[in-house]
Length: 567
Image (cartoon, rainbow, N blue to C red):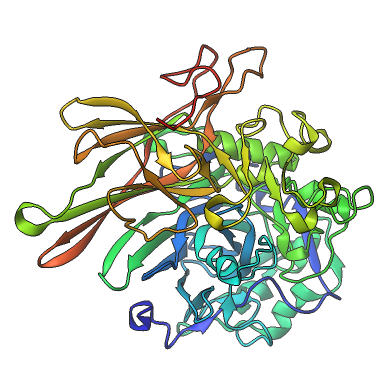
């Protein structure tokens, strides 16, 4: 990896997965703040075409081969600070790799880069001056090497390390930090705001103020939250991402998908009114979360297995596991409601994009295209339980909640899920361990109307394995994908054209209809590499899509149970 490109030589590496201490914590989950008089309470979640929101999703990161990744998070709120959870998840099963907390002052930007270390693991680095937890210089937290604790226990350590090198990331606004706290005796300066507000380009990160967020307190009211500087999150985050080939100096990037907790509907130019979400702050530290708290604030199937009934079957949640994207912003919602709202906002029946795939021809120009398809909400509907955690199945991996039937785990997972009953377990996908797989349908055309051919891709007999997968058009992978890699095996109708990937499938159940179609929540893009004699270039095009089909038959070519991709 060329460190000069990623500015690693001067970077401070962030730590991961929380502080070592387990004795102290401020917990503020599901609290309505005091700014509801200024901002109406949130009532729904939408993709915000304006590009700002409460949550952000980065579709892909990679440190495979010569690839590295860059990203930034911007607080466009020029009045309030933000407390933000950043979490990186692996491509194979959305397993936690690293998370941390960032305190953004008004107008602040936090940026980082990802590279691969000598052991083959991904490392997060930054030279940003914003406050974080873990703090810069925290013992045993630096550098930010991605963790393998939650990954499958493979015999080949190099394969385990490779699982840290591809995935996606999520950003969740836990709370606003107002400049002043509103109390019964008027407004007073907020010490947390002062601690995170930049002075001469550097945030003070006052230790005694940030330490308050690590003191013994369980907060239950708005006044409690304000006492430590927290108020309802109002959105206004935007983000960007990039992956780059450090050898060829080709860059692919775009905006992070913005999810807005809104108090109304999309209006002119796709702008929606920002809603005030519930305060959901959890400390950046280890320590077992009480089970009642876990099930109230996440729908992750591996975290909500009752430990007293099935000890060792799931994962005991740690404080740094909360919040996640399923933690409710809307009063009265439970985590399954939040997961369903988010999945509906991201649901797509078909995704469509261009491809170009040709060897060097006239003029010495070679083109290749990869598609990236990320499923950032699958984890809240179904997750792979690995061998070491599966005593009830004699060491065999299973998919939760499918293991417990169509009604899901303990009846908590919505049977209308786009995944329930559709995922197939591949016990060793690409040699990287067990993965849950879909069977989408790929149809291709050239640029002269020739095609409409159903194409296959490998490996796995048409299975799209992993919660992030790539489709390679051409002789090699633009992104040097490994864990996520699938190659289009059907002869392309032309060296250039477009394709449609049907994500929805007919489950045969749901909503009173025997032919219900369940679109799949996805984000992604097409990356095209252009190699010419005088340089290397990268082109990034976001996926286009169609929405859900309500009722009716199997959709455009879907039919039956969705069909296979294989030719």
